[in-house]
Image (cartoon, rainbow, N blue to C red; front, side):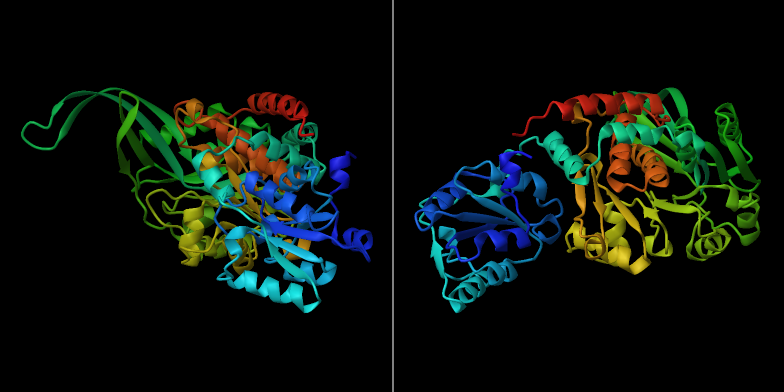
Length: 509
């Protein structure tokens, strides 16, 4: 253990060390340590030889969806390397009142901006300190620095350092994650969901805007890709697992394309053909690498119970994992999901995802699942909550539907895993995306890749950090090419090895 890490203490250790000693306490978020903080520490040292700095734990910071920007482990390490600081503590409370009462600092140092006592929390802190005979002191300052402003104006790229500290804290290595992927081929997965054919039509502009605001284009060529729940099956197969896919298709050329593609990829299928229904088709019109229009041919009528029963012609007990991939194009609704649950046994790992683009699904339909992978918009719709920040919002959803794991997809901002802090005493975490914006050619389908890899990762390891890393890498990889294509395990392992080399070369201290 380095000297810096030795400075980081828990409450019991700190109380023992500080017994019968005078010391000063500075408390804050310290998302980005800036000159204002250093000036405050220098000022605190004028009053006592011992300076303790406490920081609010990740789970208790409610300033914004992705706050703090730097996780608690890296924030603690950043403070520990400052010579002025003698001890660092991560405080797992909304405010430092409980900590102040327990360690009783002789001096509690606050920033100059709090001096006028208009902040209710500062008044409460002042009263708490003075009650046992301590003193609150406001550091002088002619200029107010802000971590939030620094992050907003010029956000530092710390994604690898943040990953390093997460892995270190969780005692997880990327080598172990790679070992996890070797177990994928032993798993049997059944996927039920809506099939979509994604068509990419390249077009040339031939006129428009002369007599009416109408753009005239000519289709030059088209390429069809498997989409919807079917691409999730393709991803899972690319991982080496034994896959069975259940869905509905129409008696049309798109349905035949789906059948032939899945057969070519050696995916077991139970495709129910509905003669009076078209296979869902989404045609993307592209001009000069820009998507200018999407034309959907979809039938969103809910399938009957008989059709649903036809989809379940397999013995569910022989599968390790079931994935319900919901696009709300007919298979799933509140009543059907209840029926599906009746088919499932307790041993199977249950995963659900509601990747709804043009329609609304409702996460509240999926109760008692092991894993859900929604985006923020879907959670806010389900809970009718536009204002709560992401960590408590996710926890609110988990409590309501009794979900064991919740991975919130954040697009180019990565993913957040919500944890039950009261149960596990481990904070939720945010993982940055590992693909640069300059590498993104087509983000459509990234969520499908994330779902496939994270679901199988959880089935094998039960480790949410390992599974989120796998899912995030797969999602990034899927963005690097046009169209929905399965992300192979070989490519993901290649990315993992490259990431491992970066992490191993990080020298934080």
